[in-house]
Amino acid sequence: MNRFIEAFRNLFRIPDLRNRVLFTLALLAVYRIGAHIPTPGINAGVLETLFQQGQGSVLGIFDLFSGGNLRRLTIFALGIMPYITASIILQLMTVVFPYLEKLQKEGELGRRKITQYTRYLTVVLSVIQSTTIATALQSTNISGRALVYHPGPGFVFMTILTLTTGSAFIMWLGEQISERGIGNGMSLIIFVGIVVGLPRAILNLYELAKTGAWGPFTPLALIFLIVLMIAVVAFIVFVEGGQRRIPVQYAKRVVGRKVMGGQSSYLPLRVNSGGVIPPIFASSLLAFPATAALVFGTRYAFVKDFSKVIAFGEPLYNLVYVALIILFAFFYVGIVFNPTELADNMRKNGGFIPGIRPGRTTSEHVSKILKRLTFIGAIYLALVCLLPEWLITGIHLDHLGWGIGGWFDRHFPTWFLKGLGVQFYFGGTSLLIVVGVAMDTVQQLEAQLVMRNYEGFARKGRLRGRR
Image (cartoon, rainbow, N blue to C red):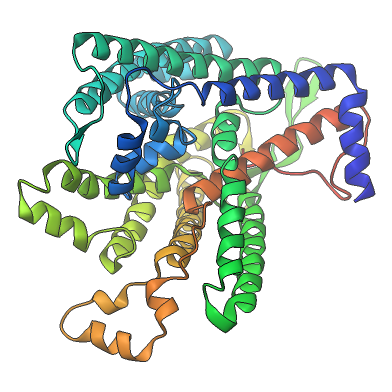
């Protein structure tokens, strides 16, 4: 503990590092101030009712990444989601368009060009999303109350201008933090938006304990929840820092009068190479039935019935959720990691894996290892994402048909089927983001301290971030 405190003090003893940390905190404070400035013309009470009715829909996912700004429709309501979407689209397009693939290989100059395209696409997506939101808000009435005080072209234009400018400003804040501060700016903005709800989650847990929500087992349930939360965070830290190191040997080469190569290295393959992208994609797809029921449920009965079958916490939802996470994990890793290109580059530099022939055999060997790691990483993501959901809603096995649900209802306790009723604020995706971003930021602070000959946070070795 003393080592950690001393390392924390060292952060503020070094002028350059102190300025970076204070700059990061200042910009994050600006972001939180903007989160309390509402968009003009909105009835906040009706909007809150709309979000309560749309729980589990795509609105909840957008609200997560906006840090709760969408629920209040502040000037930062779009959050960082347009930038994330634009980044993912351009990353996928590098596989289709050779021009983007060429830019990706051109180093710093190509990276800047792709970043510029990402900014343009972010603004375009922000305009489209804000237009859709403004149009939908005008036509929304809940219990006879209009969501917009004065609908019309003026409201639409003002909403588009406000939300698009807010999204562009958040993008600028993130880039400034990445360039002149500590950590990845975009990730830290999402991190702050999620963590700001932690006091509310603790207060909710305190209220449940105070009222004895679980009867005589309330103290045991609280201890179980606290231990489980610590264990899940430790498990995430362990897996996110896990790597499979493939040994690589470089042959000796004579270049002029110098002997190059002849050294051993390794190829690090992360257990969870996809990060939080697979759960985000899976959650987005599974949110569409609830969103469709919110919009078309009163007109089409089958849409409403289907949304109930695949609703949050239902057995079909859990089954499809796990399948989609595994599918997107393989899909995303297949896009961002090319074993054939890796084997070719290794062969050109005189590198080889001991016992494996260069070229195609090396590519197949790396691909085989990567597939196994991806499957393990996908199962890990599914477990981490489903565990908090089971705490909230339980495992609804009693809803199964053909008499199976009745058997579960008779032989399993209520808390197992209905959940503990805990508003577990850090759901699966948000918990992964919080822990991952914290690991990355601490790892960068550790590197800055060690580079200046100061002791870091860790006693042995160095901290490893997700990247």
